[in-house]
Length: 486
Image (tube, rainbow, N blue to C red; front, side):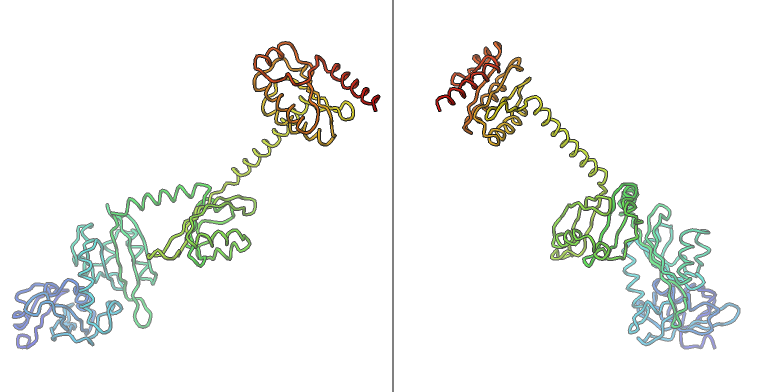
């Protein structure tokens, strides 16, 4: 009966062929394994169907041998006893043919499973990645992709083996597989051997929602590993500095919030992620104004006060792929509280010093009204530009306020003069006279007079007196004469 069956039929132990009929031999020759007759992308479907615990099932697999190679075919498998399975090739697959769980969720209902599997197989032949499928017990049903070479494996080599036996105890692979088979979606990244992999494990569920396997994807990113390690190192450094780095979508939703500086605000790194920053900082009008400028495309640096802290913010707009709209904002915020407080203390100290200097200058050049309309200014020490400026400003105000008619610059306390000092004295006298007051000089010492002559200071038109007393006596005499004439 077995030899007379018109359809190719074989008896297998696992996937090894231990008997086949004439129709099977005429199509596949003396193949020793059923998997050798099928495309690698379809090994998972066949391995699952050949499980001796499966009473009766059908599956779709693309032929690798014979004139129909490459075409999806429909097979039937059933238990033959003693852990053996009979498998029969029924003919070309129809689009409505059933697909093997857990492959069903991966396929389009309008296309046979091998078509989808073949497409995936072609993709993973060209990228450094691994795609794998396991049943709920951890048995590997599919293992394809160039990434297997990092582990010294070939596509399909570990199909039929159990992942929990392959992975080292408590390894990331074992832990992530167990999580996925317990219904958890898992994304992880780690060094595997000498290569860096990013791995996704997604549980596959049946119609009742029960997990009956998982599908996984592992992508080798060695080319980006150096950049990632540098980024992690930079992130670690940022977490120790008094800065924070954050980013938000255009609507204000925060998707990045890190840095030790956040703790100065009572916020833990990551705490703001998912929250709307426009709502959180609604009481800070400056924030909305800054964001309006940045969302308009402006790179901006500004400072703001939050509570008792001061922050300098650097905002960078990020545009969409067309470059016509800002879709998110990145920012670096630096805690400048100590610097701001130091700057303010410095400004206060400078203001105090300037006030003290002004007071000292006033004491060294006091302005004295000896009687109504007569002002005496005793000049003591060197008259530099700063002192001369203060003296001129104060003296002119006093002349106007007191309606003074005469101003006496007394140089008794000046030991010597330089060109700059003499020029300042001359400019003070000219300014006083422009206000209508008479300018006089008293107490010029011999060495000062000699210097002024050598410097060619034009004092010939000025009235000078040897002493302040003489200058005052002359002014008294002038006033008495004027009173007598009147």
